[in-house]
Length: 235
Image 1: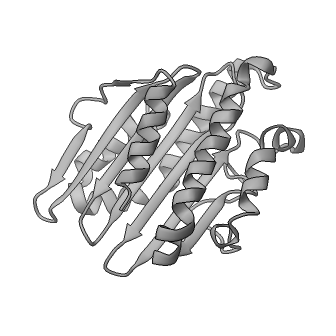
Image 2 (image 1 turned 90 degrees about the horizontal axis):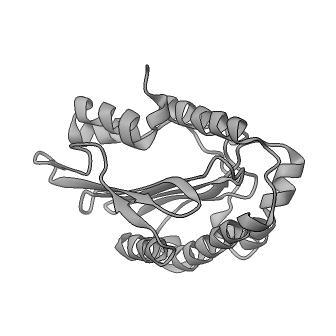
Image 3 (image 1 turned 30 degrees about the vertical axis):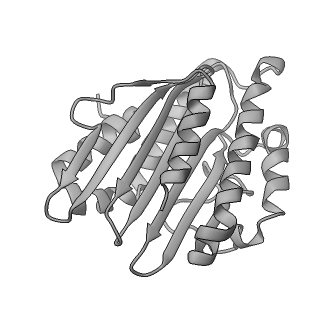
């Protein structure tokens, strides 16, 4: 279901001068013999970003997942990129979250960084529903203009592919302009906010239970704290 999305994202990362780095030992791939599912992850070094991670879970007709988070350099206070796509094939159910995840909810910050995303959502009303997300506070680390959808095949095969492309276009344009603007938040504060994001997300990540059911608690705990949200590790 999401392989074309993964290929598009990978091609853009490579075209931007990105190259893969090895994930922590044992976390690049895991197979569940019981449920015949496999999860693969990639860590990218991309100019302008201190970390860009990508994960693809293939559990056949029961579940397909594509997840990615991009962390800009500390010298750049632009939002994180967040992608979370889930397809429950047996039920024909799509859950999609695409957002520029803000470091702060200050109005000046939102005005600086969200003109493109604000315009994008006007073209995809079916991907900008009013239904609230269940595991996270939508007013913390999520923007008012996120693309969020609980839908079906109509959205998965219709509006989502083109919205995904335009969403990436919008974020790449934001990143390309980084050299021509001055961050309003200090690098030290950006670092603190990005680390807070990891801690916040690790405490609430609904996918952790899903990964545990497929790959066991020990591996999934490592995956959560060493790959997905490494700043959440206890010292």
